[in-house]
Length: 363
Image 1 (cartoon, rainbow, N blue to C red):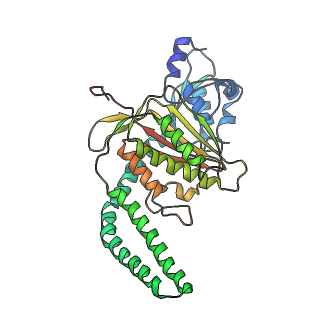
Image 2: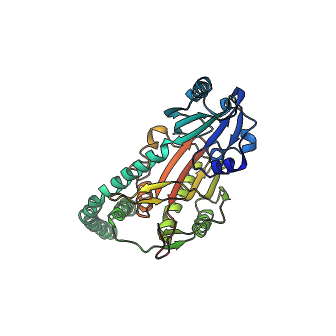
Image 3: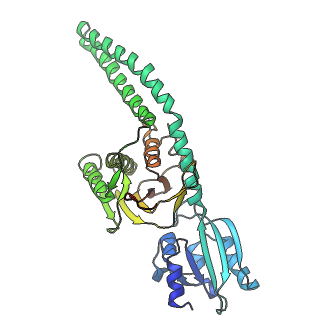
């Protein structure tokens, strides 16, 4: 069907490519298609296109049209979302007849969500930075009066009954809680450049895992799927620990303490072909380093998914809604992007970061 050189060329393409034959049987799938459909080539070849995409999908009609006309056809913004593939699988489909093969069609899928996710990252960064002034104002206008309130409550403790002392302790505890909230908001206002160096993300992940297993995630099973050849990332180790610890803690809370099969999967991979334009310039940077934190909890409500990284948006009853906004800011400051895909029992937070560039090395 395809000679080895053609197969090799298709395999290096970052877009999923399928060759569909009679009765929509899968004749070939490249590596990107394996990742997209979360199946090996051997398994894909035992299935038909009908098994891979939603029932009644326009992609099937597209294949028939190519066979009928013998010419290339394209369709834009087709929805391939399904529980198997996860949410937000919106793709552009390019279909062409395979020369010399009767009823064989080459399908190339261009996932629209990558570009849309990058657009949302700029929104997330803007949302995070929009409260910079709010953080500075809160620090000055709220923390100082709170210290006075706490001091007054402590003075009262010496002249009241034990029963009333519970109330002064409540005042102290609540003022401390508000101060911590304000301090977290202050972090958004910190625009000082942080020290960056070559960071081994596996060392960071192992450190975060040890912290989690010794505390909040001791009841959860961890799995690692690491690419051992992954090069260093350009980043600040402490900030990356903070980001990943936040994501793992969220995953552990989503799984819940009562879950008997709770699992968090930490994975890394090298994903060439993803680039993002630097705001305010024509430069484009590659984001090939992927870090994923996945849990098998109940998932994120669909109505919150698009706004999950906005400040003060949270799924927790006692949450501040600043944790994920801070994650978006830190990853944005590192020149990367972070996104969430969620269906029940499969929620993934995916971080894409640039490579560490040695001095004088081209980006």
